Image (cartoon, rainbow, N blue to C red; front, side, top):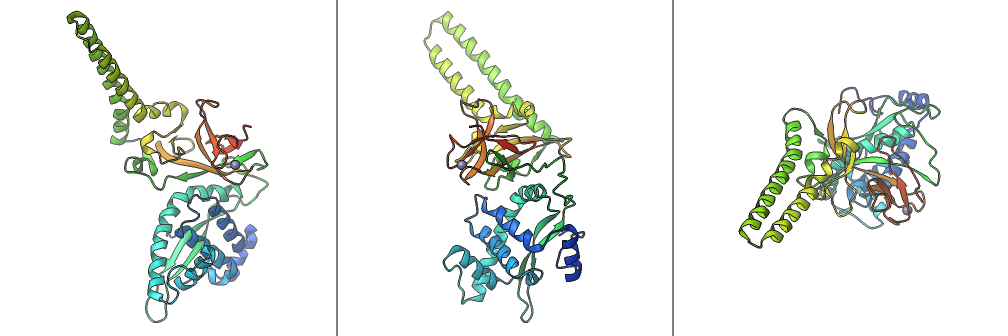
Length: 354
Ligand SMILES: [Zn+2]
């Protein structure tokens, strides 16, 4: 927690009310908003996200208690209600603390990857606060560990009439969507280098250049080698020309599939990530970031998602296929061929393309 965090538990009730009234927000509204944000997450059925929902619901029901936080026992009860079946062991306090601690740690990881998206959604709604997970460790007689969400001032202008230029609030009608950027959470070993942003400076910059340059050099050498081999074969009359050409083709294809998507990144600024970074859905993108939108030059693995205005499903930015060749478009998971939207990673707005 940074020292300048102005959270509700630090300020008195009167002060907090003044803060809320002044900025036009009540803490209940904030928790309702946060809970709505989580409903569109892919991980919404995971226990750690249910823990977050439980925290929101308990905070909505008892705003006074939300300031000091909720015990493991209260959270277990709320999670069981959300799941519609008992979770953990309601008769064993140690078991409940253990289970909540485990999910809390997982939630902190999920939280890291959702931070940017939550910030964008709050900023779009002109809400000048950012949520943070907070925990007071128990100890001594009767002091139980308590979990809560603190709201920190984000400096966003709390006026819906004057949207900030970076995040214009648009009319989300039937044909338009608003994307939210997510970090890649379940990245594999190779992709994890890009999940927190690969900063293009120092040796990392040269390594990146090498990753692009070495395959090109290699491809060129192979071509020279094979052409030389073919010429030689003509002269001495062996029959392995076809084998050479085939192996050259396979080699080029493998090289292109592995690093090919990185080449247009400098020009297009955002590309579909290569296969070794993808999961089963091809929704992972590589974004080239830099001044003036970001303080430093970097390449970041991200995912852009939005709720589908047509069916309520999940739209994610992915391949344009033949119809939108060369473009990245938003496709709904429920109807990937019909519910198609344009994708703009700068404005984060999308229009229905049907
Ligand atoms: Zn849809």
